[in-house]
Image (cartoon, rainbow, N blue to C red; front, side, top):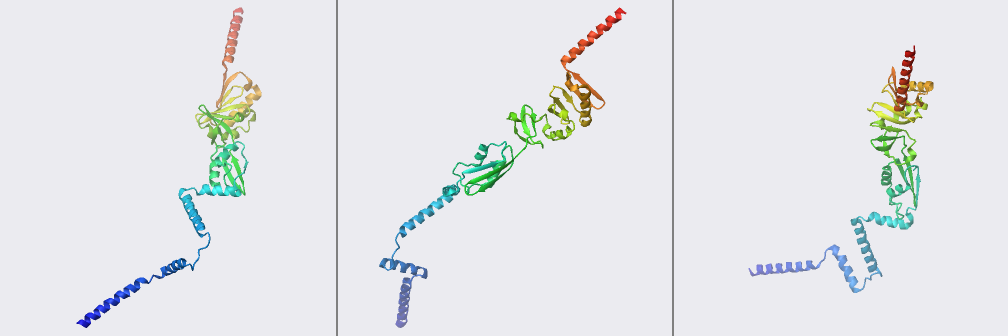
Length: 307
């Protein structure tokens, strides 16, 4: 019993000693670290000069870069750095801007003298410029190191559309360009009324054969979205039919050639009916006509009494 007990005690003691010995042995990854620390403390390993300064600078750079990224300041910092490096936009070339102000272009591009050419968003600039009233399409190009080229394709004004009390410039297709704010467009034809801007495209072809009439028109007035009344420079209003417009204009041209009807004291000419032409005199002409009729009646009565 004693021997067994002794053996048991010896076995436990051995195990304890073995456990104590294993506790001193470090894992493989830590052995190099331990050897480095021992060598550093014993002087066998020397630290290079300025390692601390370089480490501190690297740490500050990492913290700064992390703050810039997290704070969303990356584009601004990149723009500043590239501008300082010589890529700041110094010249803007604009082509095709007959109606668009260069000031509006520069404002939409967001150029302030320090804008970097590398940081300029071409697609965003193109979309912004295409939103201007006169611009149909825009092209923006980078010319390194410091130039931006802008090419505009502007819309063409075809006429003036009056809707209510407002005047707008329109294209041939009827699309509204913007409000009329310049007298230089006063030579364009005037279209008045609802849907007049849509029907305006057909006017040029319909009046192409009658330039002597078209040159005297001051306004095309759309009536019930079906037909035109034309107001001439002499003040005469010509009421045109919904159908058979060419025949009506041919009749008007013949009346003008034979009787100079457009130069007479007439208020309106009604050509809506193909078999009948109605002419309305001005109030002054009506008064003169009434006076002439009265004088004629008096002359006839006097002549009858004398007989």
